[in-house]
Image 1 (cartoon, one colour):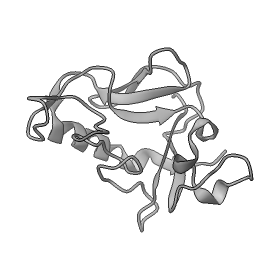
Image 2: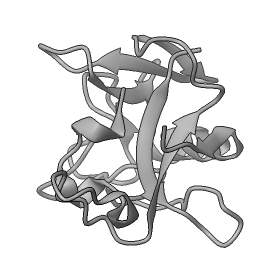
Image 3: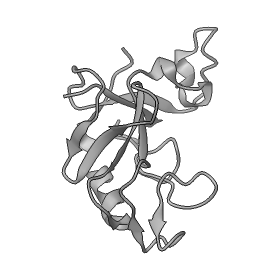
Image 4: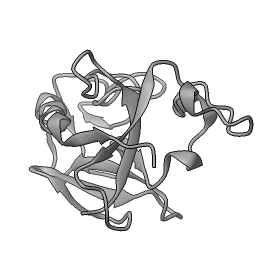
Length: 147
């Protein structure tokens, strides 16, 4: 399985917090920083279009902007300032970062022009509630790993 990394807020059980912010397990469905396209546009009861958008993931937390790097990892150079965040890796995370299957109904695609960042998107157009539920179902498979 590919090493898929996402810094997120840790809940009281040590699992990623589910929510609709850039620091949670889930996507922002609407607004200026929406992470998905909906049909009809802006309708949270609509469908997530299967395109190049979704839950952002990376190969290595060191490649992230400072606001997404957990503040306890500050090294004097990386500008880490992500409050209450932990670095999570999905599954065993031993293989190279690559496009491919992620979990039931989900896949990873690489962002255009790169090999170090991608998104977890639905494999087909689905209702937003289904996509968020599929992401939430991966929650037990994320482990804190700052390596």
